[in-house]
Length: 321
Ligand code: NAP
Image (cartoon, rainbow, N blue to C red; front, side):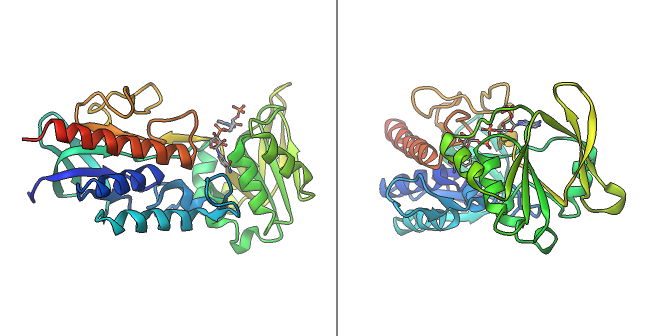
């Protein structure tokens, strides 16, 4: 085992990078472990969910907007400028039962005086077998930015499932490539913010399919999407809705599997914190989307990363041996 790190930060979204920035400026020389590239590229990218976002228009300080990946590159560069080190890999196991804490990246064991968990959240899937099957073909995706420009979606009719900001954002982005985009929602009201809704309603390529639940993605036998079997939420009847691709945008689940049984999690798997960023284990702090299922914004995640670094710094100072 190598020497004991002051702070290991797990996760490389806005929370992780901001924690790294603050911890490095506090001279703690933090080690940040960023996720590896997910082969299915819908979740867990180094840089987090902003790597699969197009324009970020609500991050203060960028009046013209900024691309998600560029914002993440800038955050990383800023943290590295002050001495943060970034290592690529998956933290798949931790031991918080004794100090120093231990964190494993595959076979590599890292000892740490303090840990900051900033592992974010990942896209949800509908959970039907045909969706799982057709994801393998590339016709079903949870990332328009990653896959929207693929030839089999160009000048085609694609469906987006969901009624939140993500669904609207995905649909709007897809209109750059698709000839037509249908937002399929299980209710008759969107959850998305008014400004996003307005943008979608004004886009001539976007239309809405209300009160509809996807019960099957067609056609597994043909190894491509030819349509959706939709169930009418009002009368229970089903019918086939023709389309050439499916994007799923129905919310997220926190990336906290490695911390199950190690930290106190809520029923959905979000890490419970108190007094800012303190987890159930003294010396382990958490921030960002792995904690927060309410605000889930880049700016709030960054703020929580900052809080976690300040909490860690103060705790380390008070507990210096
Ligand atoms: P969300 O707000 O939780 O919306 C999820 C949507 O998916 C809801 O409309 C929900 O329907 C639907 N849904 C959930 N499970 C479903 C299922 N099994 N089958 C069919 N539909 C299902 O999630 P989100 O859109 O990912 O947004 C998350 C957060 O990020 C929000 O706070 C949002 O404001 C923010 N965000 C902001 C931007 C932006 O400002 N540019 C972009 C993306 C996300 P119900 O409405 O019926 O519950």
